[in-house]
Length: 282
Length: 282
Image 1 (tube, chains in turn green, red):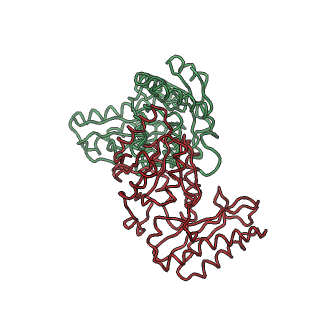
Image 2 (cartoon, rainbow over the protein chains, first blue to last red):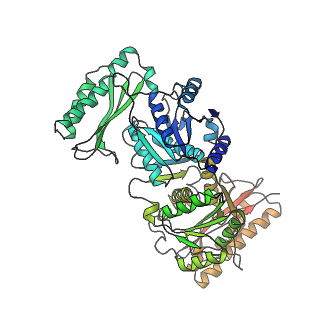
Image 3 (cartoon, rainbow over the protein chains, first blue to last red):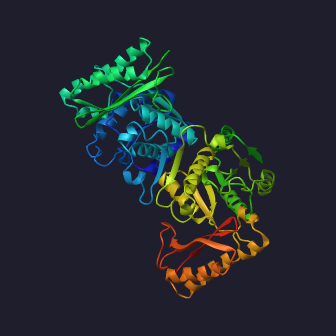
């Protein structure tokens, strides 16, 4: 495995691979890899001949006062994990190469980026789509994988790829959970033992919502409210949003008569936790 | 020569060419081709193995009340001209393929897009950069050519290419002028004989600015004012803007002690005319 730090070096590798008609699979990450990321790597490895993982903590997707500085970084461990998974290249560029000095160019998916997570974190998704497009331009993947845990991000990236006519296929893969059902996230390490126990209410809340729908209770208000009660019972959790929305438009639904998704963000101390559940009426 | 109307068909052609390691040259246009466009085609033909010209009157770069509907269109004549120049493919997609239904994704170069032409035509450059990126994604050119006549557009597209790390080279080529010095533009056909005579004041104004600088008079105010006087002497012209700016930042300069550019837009009846002159102190 090779660690690639410069854009021009990555481009050379991509040109080489393209010249040999190899398929390129790509997993963009902010590092501090966990089983969620590794499940993306494994899928991409099935699909492609060359696997590239990028590790870049993207300043443009953090707002002022957010956790950019304390976001966990551990390249040595990440590289070891990538070697073990058979990754071919870890692309870890410097910020000044991805953001050259001068006027900034932004890529923004309107209509999807300013609600839910985007409402709580203004500019976040503009930062995500801009850096993902830049990484796509350098890596030129045939396949790129994203986690379902960041459901809104997945919808937005998919839309960007469709709308900008990018010639690549996005795969969104199931959330990987720990033994208590908590969605894996690089930020989970910030939870105290007590907070980590409180966070188990999140998968319980999602499960209760699913069960209610399975009972044929399709009204969104009722589904949201069983989930809310479970979350609110935990003093260490504060709900930022909890919404039942259409899976593509992300607009709230009032009844689950088509595939929908229950999306939530909760604050647990200083740590922000995201999760979601597909709700399928069929 | 082949006329290609669908994105998937264009992609196939590009894949084929890439597989044979051919270099692709690209001239994006809104059609109604004139010698200015053809000079771009000729340059790109020198550089590349395959030449693609796109013809697409892009609704996203026209504001409400602007001339989208009456913008001249003549595909038959354009195709004949392309055949004569040895163009390989004319890509002329439908708007609903370049703008799929659903939430819109925009590409915007901040800091350069809201001044000068962008101030008079809000959203214009966002429309330009968005469609140019989409076309680049489909055509995947090694070289793309733009005319110096639309100087601000050229600066903005260059910046987008650098900032989004697009793997292609932008060439900006000199303005082609008629025998009276008027910059060729698809919109010139809208000028009456009288208006066309009045428009000759534009190259005269640019020349007077150049001469003043050649005399060692480097203050921007004086240079602008000689140009302004010549334009204002023509009753049929109305100056929208006339600014002397840095060639990269497009910020106004007060003295021409580094390469600068005099940019102008005038209204002549219903017709908007753009022109510019490089001003070089050396």
